[in-house]
Structures are given as structure tokens and as C-alpha cells.
Length: 119
Length: 111
Image 1: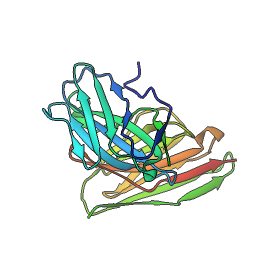
Image 2 (image 1 turned 90 degrees about the vertical axis):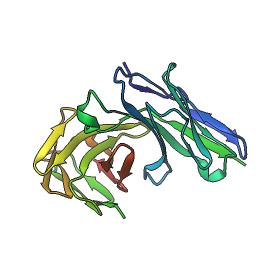
Image 3 (image 1 turned 180 degrees about the horizontal axis):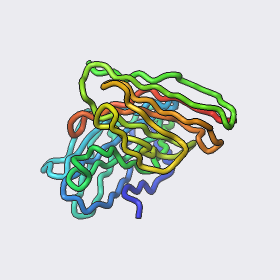
């Protein structure tokens, strides 16, 4: 079974609108971290936001917020007031911490969502 | 500050030729290092990780290998490339729980 599922292969959004990118995950590890990355056409992976499984509050970083619903195993990324520069691929990723040797074995990524912001 | 370097940035190689991609990090010591591959239009797949010099763990069987000859150097190699080895290769350094840094990547095309 997939550990990270991103069900939106592509999205078109009007500039200045809010965007929600979906991510669900599957793990039996009680301790894990959830990440969102942005990958523009240049290929670089840009870290956006992190949520720990024990964090009580949803993470926020500027225009980015993570809507963490633990019981539903959901970690959606919300981008407020979208800009043309937000057009890129967005990846959700997870790092399991307890059952995987302290997380030394890296991140598991979803297949990504291609977001296009239209003027 | 921490920095990851990768080279070359792009590479075109014929099938059956050898491969060597290099990753070096600055600004830290004894980092956990990772090689990921991204096929066209896909997410990232973890290939190898290393928690120290000479310590390599492989996630998927393939004709690639990795080595860590120095604390801040991580090398991805192949003796004979396959067409399926084409992709975007990213080196990453993970320090702590959420400090994830990726290098600029190497775009490999096997012809």
C-alpha cells in the first residue's frame, strides 16, 4: 500500500485564490514527521513546511499552512493568496521515526501535484 | 550555513557506460546523507542512505552503488548504465527531525 497519497495530479487556480493540496498518509509508527516540498521547473526541492505527529497545533510558515487531521491521516497544504510564482510541483513526504531506526532511512514521497496559477 | 553541492548538473551518457555522481556538503559534520532518483513526472524514490563513512544502506535493488569515502562526500556510481537509469538524481542531507536539505540535482539522460 502507498504510504503517501496525493490524489490531485494537476490543479489550475486563479491568482490570489487560496489553494488546498491534498495528502493522506499511512503508517503504524506513532512518531513521524510530515513535510511539503515545492519543486519548480528548475528541479530544486524547496522545503516549505513541517508537521510532527505529536504537534498539537497546525504548522504555519508565511502563506503556507498545514491542515493536520491525525485521525484521518490527512496533511493537506493550504496556500493563501496564491501568486504566479507558486506554479510548481508540490510533494508531500513522510519520515517515520520510531520503527525505522530513528528516521535514518529518509523520506517517503507522494507522486506530487502540479499546481498552475493562472492570472 | 549548510550547503550541498552536486556535480555534474547535467549528463548524457550512452547505455553501458560507467557513471559517477558526486555530492558534498558544507557546514556540518557527520550528516546522514541520501540519494534519491526522480523519474520524469514522478515523485522521489530513495536509493541509498548513509549514516557515516563507509556505511551504506540500499533501499532498492538496481545496478547502482553508492560510497561514502569521506564524512561529507557521497558518491553514486554504476559500472554499466541502463536506459532506465535516466532521471533526476538528488542528494539530500538530513539533520535533526525536520532540517531537510536537498542539493541542486543532476539530470542524467542515458541514450
